[in-house]
Length: 145
Image (cartoon, rainbow, N blue to C red; front, side, top):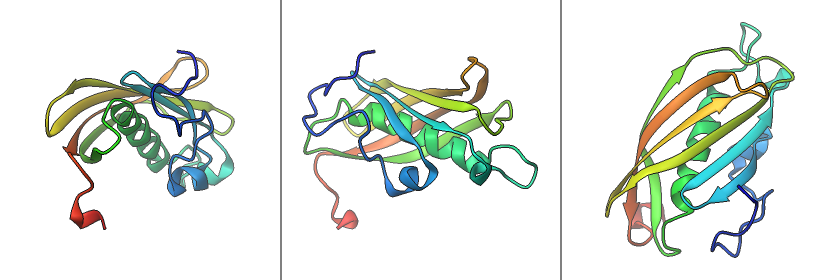
């Protein structure tokens, strides 16, 4: 997928995803047409006590990719939030691995969307998979003010 704005004039490939992503070094790779990918190189700061990448990194990357896929197709005034996220951790990631989380929208309804994604390393080895449900509002919910 080529990097372009996909109708979102504020998008740039290195756009700020969130403060959490910034703190982890997770950056945008592509965004649009119901798909999104983010990437991160595993460093010592990402490791758990067992010496492999912490599952929280995987979760953050997959949540960002799946949510980003939905954000790429909702209207500018609409809002969304993760309602449910199911992650299967399949393989370990190690220091130096370049992780890529790719998400896509399976179905978007009026109030809910279903998304799925995959987290893999630079060799294409699947590290984790995810599926989830997102709530959609027609405008920013008052609870988010």
